[in-house]
Image (tube, rainbow, N blue to C red):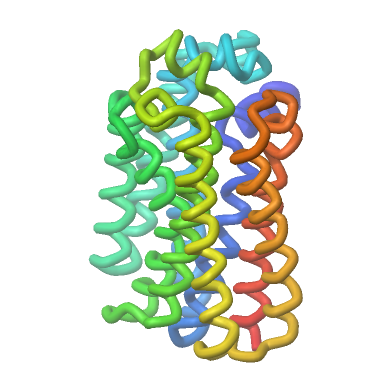
Length: 284
């Protein structure tokens, strides 16, 4: 069990659970759940590609993690670097092949994001803002993937939900570059936003992105079915939006590492709540 637990930590399996919810919500929003076989394949693809992405990222991030995340399995020695590569390649293959059995749209999305995951870990993470944009896109793409499992056209509600998630995800990524500034610069000399415009400037950009995401969530509540005047969605998204505002404003006015670490999971919880709100609305 210890070995399996280490692999699950390496691949951050908890993130895969969130992807499952996002894909199912998108399928519900774009016409309903597909047949059982297609549904299973549509969940296998994002789960395994996500696992592969985290495994290869940890492989290339060992130096950074020795400074910023000393409990990661590769840093502690629970998993050897070569084993992480094998896990990653296996998971990439399973995810892309599963998508290939759905349709050409699902296959294209899976193949492109599998390739981008590797490029991100190898080099893109060090490119100014592009790495952050890729990660934010990877948070939004499960909704688009779920849409194309069912349809060859993109539903407006999926576009708006994806935009909301992308904006909040990019803001959270910028907060991550603020929190991990020391390790990123020392270990990889990464050209992150804080290195270019400073910590406070980056925090202001992140707050603006959170505000944009919140604006979309409000628009959904007033104008777009099935979110329109939905009390469940309204209640859940209100809590999510308030948490994101708290974190966003806090990063602007607090320059303390203690605050950064304390709120590390608050934005994740807020985005998780938003996902639950989207899913609950899609069930109606």
